[in-house]
Structure formats: structure tokens, C-alpha cells
Length: 378
Image 1 (tube, rainbow, N blue to C red):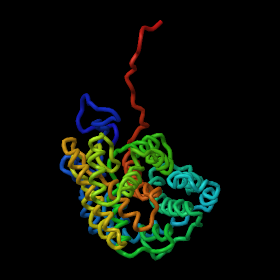
Image 2 (image 1 turned 60 degrees about the horizontal axis):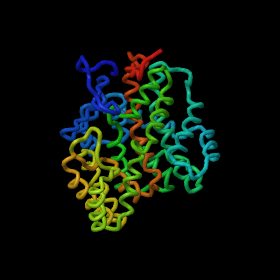
Image 3 (image 1 turned 30 degrees about the vertical axis):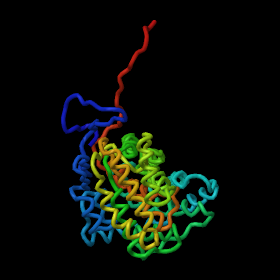
Image 4 (image 1 turned 90 degrees about the horizontal axis):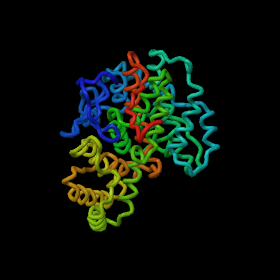
């Protein structure tokens, strides 16, 4: 937990607290040198191959993969909260259509939070009952926010569908083919947890004050709205979509590297090697694009990636997960401005897990600073 560093003594860190170790956790392990990501000891690629997002969310939140009875109970609990308060949808109607869907979605959740059961209780038992409500409410609200972009009304959930299939149904008005639902589910698993990044830290700071879990998630959403954090997948796709085929991508990338340009979807604060989540999603992205007659976009992506990674090899810059998720989401039917929303739906699982891990013994976060006095005082 925060405040329990594995090694005592003075720590050195860079801008953005890079290199600072703030505590310990049993939730995930990120090996940025070897390109490994573990959730509760399980390699993420193995989880994506053999488990669903419902199973992985249970693992991340509560520490164990559910057996059949526990999974049944978890799915029942998730399904129970698929219909948020109507007041949240009413709030959406008052928002401008051109507002970013992530902002609309965040506003709706703030309204829904006013109706959450046990709103005044911040005891651990009450907090542990909230993840299912938050995961399911946010999926329904996110779908409505995306539909609002086209002036469309929300769609009621279907009880016969799993988490990913139901979200896509409520967003698109149809259930995509099974392989596309599986690909989307894999993308949620790949993004369900990633340590104490900026949004997770924002959520943790809020929960440490004695606030409820919904308020902590809203804080994480606010942090995620920044283009440096949650908006990179949209920017990466728009960069790729502007390129006219593989040869155009190669020419443009060579010049952009020479000009010192930054590339959304490339480079990572932690990974100094290939991001393992990219390789995990590659087969899904390639297959979904091919099924929609968009194989040329895959070839363009590979050409861009080859030139960028080759041109920046000495800086150890590699494609990260933001470079590839848009290649899944676009052919499935999500608009680019909505790409940050699946990331938010997934990563809030990790935020909530860190909050629940911190709560039993955690104090309010209140770090100190070193005052740098300029000039002589009076």
C-alpha cells in the first residue's frame, strides 16, 4: 500500500515523480525491461486467452479468479446494476452533442452518484459492494454518451448478454459477431489495470480522504480526460487514418522522425521494450480489420510502426497499446472521439482495486514539498 515502500531510505525521482516508489501492492506487476504485465500473478496474455472480462475484473478487484459459483454470483450482481438512474440520462439531454463523450459520460456518472445506495456509508463493507454498481452503471452511461453524439436515444440492456456484448449492443444497437465481441473483451482485459499511473493516483488521493468509491472513480476520469493519458488512442488512430497507404506512411514517418515529431501511441513511461499488450491484441486487430475489408489499414499501421520504431530505436521507443486499440474499435463501429471510453471502462477496475487495497489501513495522502526560497526575505 502507499506509504509502505519496499526499500527504505532516500529516493531519487524525476519530473512527474518518475522513478518514485510510493508503496507496495499485490494487484499487478509491470516489468518495463522485459515487457511483462501480471495481474495478481497471472500474465495478462494468458488471462485474455482463457478468461472473460467479468472473470478478470473479479480477479483484479478481489484477488482471485472466481470459480463457477462465484462467477455466476458476480455476473448476477453486474447484471443487477445495468440500469442507472433515469436522472443521469435526463442530464445527458441537456448537454451539447459536440461535447466530448468522455466529458458527457463523466457528467452522467456524477448525477448517478447522487442516487447510489448507501451513499453516506464509506465503511469497507459498503465500499466493497460498489464495484459491480460502478462497472455496470458506467457501461450503460458510456453507451448512452456515445449514442448522444448522433442524437440517438439510449437503449435498454439485454439480460442474456455478457459485459462486453451488452455494452456494444447498447452502444451500436446491434450485437457484433462473436469474434469482434471477443476482441473487444480482450482489449478490456489488456487495459484493466496498470499500476499507480496518474489517474489511479488521483482516485487513491480521493479515497484516502474518506470519500466514497464513486467519487474516486470520477477523479480518475478527470485525470484520464487529458490527451497525455486517456486521449492518446484517439490521436494515434487519427494520425494513422490521415495516411494514404503503407508507402505514404513510410515517407511521412521518416520525415516526422527527422523533424523530431512526437507520435501518439508510441513510447511509454514504463516500457523500454515492446509493450506486451500490443502483441496480445495484434491478432484481434488484424482479423477484425480483414473481416471489414480494411487490411490496407493494417499494412499502413505496420509500415508506420516499422519506421517509427526503427528511427527511434536508440531512444527505445516502441508502439504502446494506444497505437492499436483504435484499429479494433473503428471497424466494430465506435467513433474515434469515443475511443477513450473503453479504456476508461477497463482501467477503472484497477483504480477501484487500488482504492480497496488501500482502505483498511490507509491514512489521508498528504505529502510534503521542499520550499525553494528566492531572494532575501525581509
